[in-house]
Length: 114
Image (cartoon, rainbow, N blue to C red; front, top):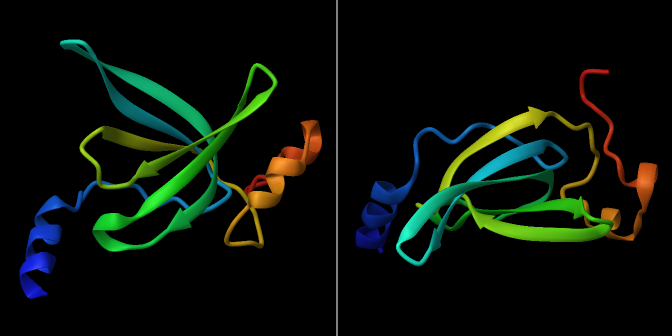
């Protein structure tokens, strides 16, 4: 078991910013198309954080062209280039799955510094 922890410690990123559920973030993801790679920015609200350590993931939700889109990102994956916090949200839940049923202004999260 200690050998697995040692391998996991090498793969954990040190420069991950502190963000919580409810924050609006920009995730810079490395996309490979054929033999070319590019960086794609995915901006949305963090609705869930799961697990911990090397297997930590977070779910980002945004509305694109009137349709809700959610993506789950592994925090320490090499494909996730960086995560920027755009604004901090004020929420009282650990998971914001209720935002899936909301439309328009009801789906907004209050800003922490208001």
